[in-house]
Length: 139
Image: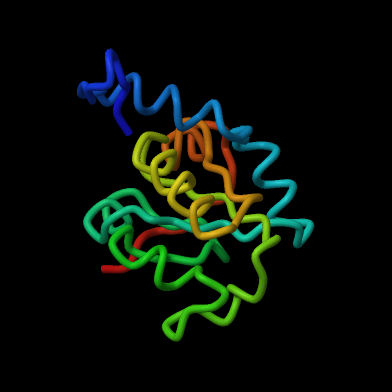
């Protein structure tokens, strides 16, 4: 994603890119994500890498999918999809550690047709700070 000026592409910094990406959908706060997840209305997908999950813990019931596998695992038409990836109107809430990489991941899911994909404001750290359920990470 880059801007065009006088017919030429010019680079866009990460802050501008995040702003542009996030303008395309509504992000969700931890308490609202918890409510939707607990109510069976959303699939919570943790894309943090293993070292962070081991250090900080896991959200009980969240689907863990490494970021580099996300699109393959959540594409309802894909041959490598997880069983939960059944339809394009699935509400997916992606979370990373602090809510940055998850914004880019949610935008990528939109490109696959998962139009209800969003990400968690503040990521796992905000979830934990809100006092929402966390279990120790695998050792």
